[in-house]
Length: 270
Image 1 (spheres, rainbow, N blue to C red):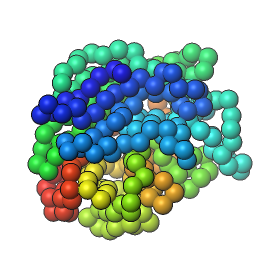
Image 2: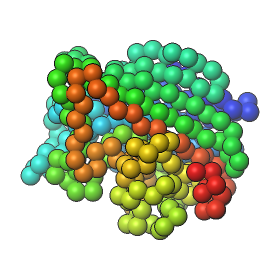
Image 3: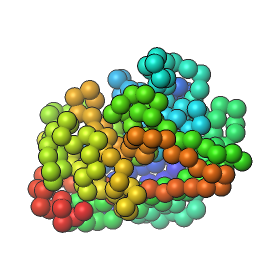
Image 4: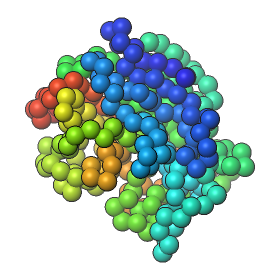
């Protein structure tokens, strides 16, 4: 374990390194378990259907042709293919650690050990009305001496599968409700750019919103029926390019609540 987040004498999240995982699972640091203040676990790790889904993490399936997500790689005109192309995201140190916060340095590396991206991740927890809030910001910097392409299955020929960036795997429990201010249900909210998105289970609710305009422009990635997962699509339509030394940043806030705050309460929080 790398660090814990504690609020009101409750451990609400743990950050684990993931270095021991096999290459095809996309080894990377991730938050799991994440819990409500009442103790409900709201992340899942290594589920049978997608064992490379690791709690709440940051990952991409295509970084200059390398898979740093895990699982099969989507290849244009071929579909998902098992390839020996899995990199890893390595914990490189903590900059600051408090009960409610930590800053982390990470390296995104190929199987041969080349560093593709340097990352500075900032993780904060705070008590809010209805529960607590997790805020994660990530700053990625091209560590190579060449232009670096960041893509997704969507940019490689699989429409609607622009996943990559922030991704939250939820436990499979009951029939969740997923909604925004404009609509409800997977078909209505997937691939939209709503200001906030909420996931309501039997006794808990998660709400997601970007911390900045760049993140809010990234469409939501939503799965309910195949598996329970929420993400923010960094490369939803076209790949992104980073020049040598260039970078990008994204930030996500997550409300983690026991019970069921309504849309008005979520709007106020967002």
